[in-house]
Picture 1 (cartoon, helix red, strand yellow):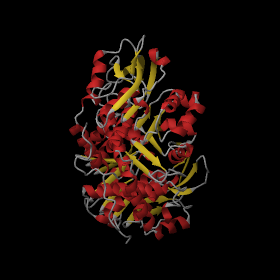
Picture 2: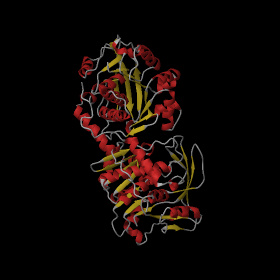
Picture 3: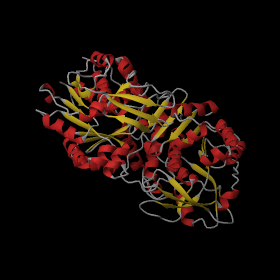
Picture 4: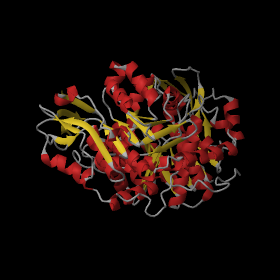
Length: 312
Length: 312
């Protein structure tokens, strides 16, 4: 198996200034796997309830997502309800019903114990650690995400997981909370000292920054005239990022840069609709075109000698 | 005269989590002219009091800044005191003493009535308009800045000025306040409809975005491990931006992109010290090196055909 994601599948009811659709398909594993599916084979380890809609399962399968480890349990699928502020920058959770997700214990099948790429989406760090313990071979890249809730409630478990992943993917605000450091560069360096070779900081509408030992790569986000629903943008970014790396196979710095853009491209599509609508209906042509748009957005001539005029 | 700036010269007392130096040389015209001086001849139209320090005047002159229109009046120089939050993102004004700046009436000398480039820094829009009225020839580029105070207090005058400049340079939050539009792209397009051919949105630690009719260029800010004092970053950006354009003379899209980076480079230096210390002591080698650092920070291969792998 090329890529494995362990995370949540949920039904989201999101209220925005524009509309309030009920029970859109969501969850970290959903967004991640859909985004990754455009580039490489991806399998999902997650849990849903008896109410999981047949068409949602069908949609994932139609994207080639391996859903054999998407367990169906007695009870209802995880529900999340939230409201976005006018500028879409903050989601206020209105209601969380864990349902079958409350007892989620990820179990990897023998095949799933040897993924080339593993993404530990935002779940209890003890569960993330248990997944790492089930691996039979070291993946080429393990990335993990987390959130405020675990940073505040399970700091020690989380530190252990962070020490075990190759890449931490984290929101800017959560990075600051995790490290207690307001300066982004210092905060990222602090995480690198905990173990990961790479920290990817997600900044929402401001883009993303990738820190490795000797390199920093930063990209703005794609400037969208219409943002419909920012839910899942981070997981979609991670899916595009890891999907691209899995497809090219080679973790050179050049490819990491391209992967950062592919992640940004996929996230920019995800927020253009509620739930997974847009993300689930892309063509490679659209993805390519937006990748080139990113290049036009950020390109400048930086190669010239004596580019800057001399002072008169 | 190549570039003219009309704005303020001040003594700033800025309190940050790190230190609180008193009465550093500041003001929009100071930061702008110092930054621009590395690239092209620049003159300042501003006012100072009897207490203006001889060494500050000497420092400006040493950078080749034309200070003949830096009027000295009876009274004290403009004073501003502020405190920055822990993350340096917000300045809370503690005290403003306009002093001689209260009666500032910019008068352009015959020579100054024909600048090639004009920057109307953040002053009363009626004064900005009076400067435009004194021009004897249309400059190649007129850029203007503004702030909350004028957006709220002199909206009609400000609209008139915005309709008369080629470029509006504005903070992101102030753009939203001006347009009442939360979405950045829509807000920028709204300003373009008022008259300017270009809007440059300054986003602090998140960089800057430049909007023209058919193009958007975005750059992250330089990731600094130590930010000492963000005061003047926006005016420094404007100085680097216009200084570079004045030096190359040609307002092609390619040069506008380079100018955005030069502005970002100069701003990144400005915030590394209190007041103008760092900005006033740069070498062209340092500027060139950081320009190349920006390229390394943002470069990715976006030119390849079929860059993205096909879905399997």
